[in-house]
Length: 486
Image (cartoon, rainbow, N blue to C red; front, side, top):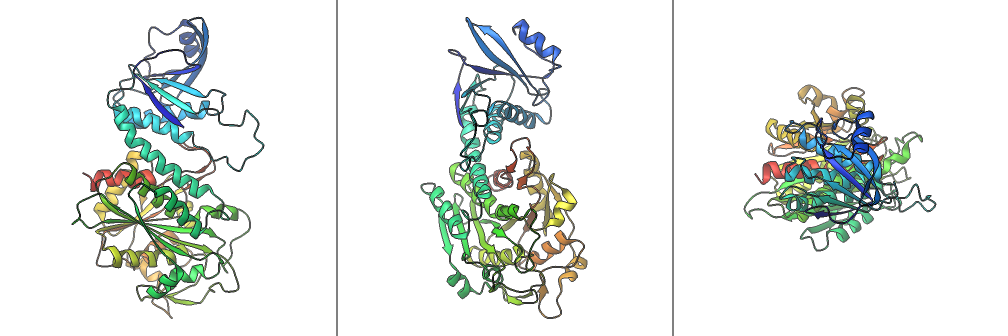
């Protein structure tokens, strides 16, 4: 979807929406539109839409009102996003190729106006390349949004927001693609192609190189698949050369059958999105490059496919991680932490990051606890946890912090190895985090985000339709803005 700007309305538009504040309908509205809105109980609440038809200049115009909520409210930015998303959802397949949004007199800031446009673009994202028999009514018709009378500075703010849109859309594409299209090697190929010309530097480790480094945990997961595993590193060096980088590490299980501990058939097709953490990292790194972030960030994606081949690892196997710690594999469906532990060790040895944030669709237990409203956050550092939570609140990607401690840590002690990869029936998300924490060296500030409940949606949300949400991209970018670029 293209976004363009006009200082004032010129010419005619087949579809035009006027952004209005709550309880503040303009006095110069056509009577039919004003009375229709009143009878439909339109008050201008955030995201409310009313549509009518009016005559302007001898032509019948399809006109809409969209609510921005109350001016000056604490949630004004969120309200602006609701307005943009509501318009996109309403008119995406409505037969109109262009939507003009009149922001004149809306009292939005440039950042809020850009947020409205960002939400409109994100809510309008669809991935229809495999549909071959859509009717005209099902096809996306909206191609361009024209912002009229946007506040001064909106076009500059949109330059940043459009980079965010690119990153979220890249993540959604990776997460949406089926597992026969996106697997470790093709994930790497997609990233390389998308990053060309952005200034991002890509490094890739194949299985032979990972074997030499001793990544027995990650390779143990990959050994059951004919698709070889990969370690993808994405480097962005936009900050001071002497500043240690921040590392974002993503779980990239491109399909998860559960391995020998195989999952039930019902819903297994959803496991194409078990690489949502790696997808978020890949998209966030694209955002940082496109907007020229003044920070040093390393993105690492551990990429494997978990399959129940005759060569697959078995429950009871013991593997040796790159850190030298040994792991008794009790359940081969607890594979994400085995991928992450070697990725964490590698990024620490290779880049010596000042801070580490990992993202993973790690546990069903986090969905049981938080449903699809929040992702879970676990951390060894209160300040880091608070800053990530604040960043998530700003962009609507919410986090809820969980406890950690020695009592939970004891649950993953193994009688035969240094640890086991599951801790029993209860506290599954916490024991998973305790497992990962054992691979964080020298008390490096670290946070683990369990995003299993939020990377895929069964119903539309504010800025996404059913399917891939792109969760994590905006959160990581906002964290970089708030902390690394402050």
